[in-house]
Length: 253
Ligand code: SAH
Image (cartoon, rainbow, N blue to C red; front, side, top):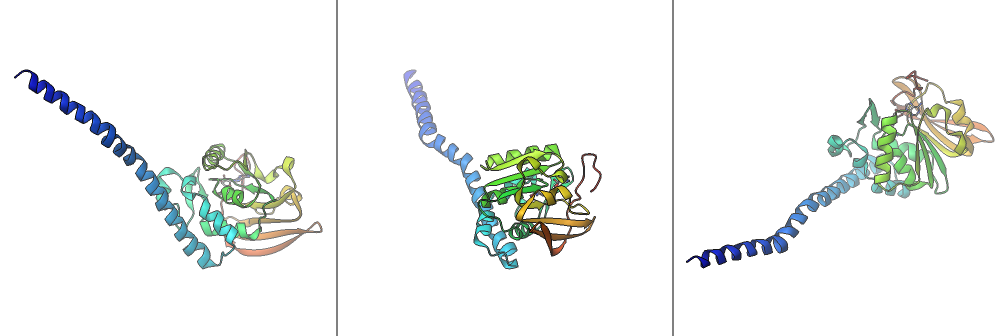
């Protein structure tokens, strides 16, 4: 009478252990990894839809550029709570009163500078790091400058977590460019000064392209400048609204 319940208890415990090791443990493992894989797939689907509806439908057709947008995980460049909106047709807040640009604008700016693999590119206004990641898919070296330290820090983290080792992020005032690495084959400016900064003009290589939103607050034009025989040739792209370019004291340029 005394032995059988003990044996039964042992047997049940042993079965429980076996169940846990063989059935329970893999099931637990599967439970924790499944949602991640599932959400990555889900983000991939949203990304493909973004490419179709926001880029292709608006005339972005260059296969290398579309492939870059397919690869870069935009959701990793936005704050955690906004991940679900990452692929929507709009800019999103990234903290410090700044925004990650709308996907179409990133595509338009990227296309306008016609990036090549061997190009060395300078970006002013790292923000989230998303535009830099897109450029890093297309060109060997991307230098990017952000004036707000905390944004530069989180962009560095997002870029390295996504495996970008060819992007160099500096905290500082991009108005002055990055003379140590000049000249640049292309310059992408994602904050708006009233006039094109002289140092950026100087740091653009012969044959280089610069895309920049210039103008007053809320009344800017995205322009493309191409350096030919030392002269800048200007083309208007479209009216835009970017955050202002500011100096280290917060004064607008
Ligand atoms: N390219 C970014 C969008 C950036 S928004 C992206 O893909 O997410 C513009 C950024 O320019 C802001 O983060 C702002 O802090 C930065 N900025 C403003 N003035 C600047 C300056 N003088 N030098 C460098 N960055 C500047």
